[in-house]
Image (cartoon, rainbow, N blue to C red; front, side, top):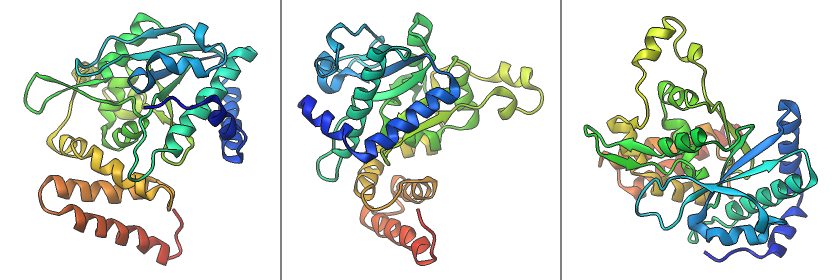
Length: 290
């Protein structure tokens, strides 16, 4: 993947859409009194050359996460950004522009990789957080103890996982010390995945329930695996839909229900596409916007 020119990012930063999203990000920072930001970057897209397009990027400290799977050419990296100074703010603004650039150019017929992945506010880089992010990237195969990797850090995948993870599975992530995970969604908006606290998952007998909560890696049921195996097809559909509709919970439910039928060999892909179009057009005809 060719590294975008600095001029491309400057053009994006001049758009109303970018300015609107930047304002929303700074509002979140202000509302939550965030002082620090850790961004998870997938070096498999551009390698360390990505830092060359950032102001002071050459000197930007980053740390690598243990390789989650042997087939990856490069690592995931964590960058530490201090939000209290102009340098940190400038880097944040450029990373947001790059995230929007990658999403805008991820179009039907020409998919674009994502290098800017998850945004973790007030989570300084420690060995504990690095190990936690490594663990989230793995799952046991169905009925086995053989590990398979889970590309959760890709914004397109974590949106899918948000609908697939059960409340106890989300609690497994919360137990690692992660309560909020931010990412840029299909709609080019910064979205937050809020992980549930124990008493929201288990209203009673919390201690006993937590003792039964398995540590990571995840163990997914058959339906979860069937849907995960359709990730490429699901993202292909959203890639075609995103210029026409707002991707929301309803559109996810419609697309994933059809993906599950494909996985169970109860539906052809073409019929599934027809059903998705019909399902999305029906609310419009009833005057409901996406």
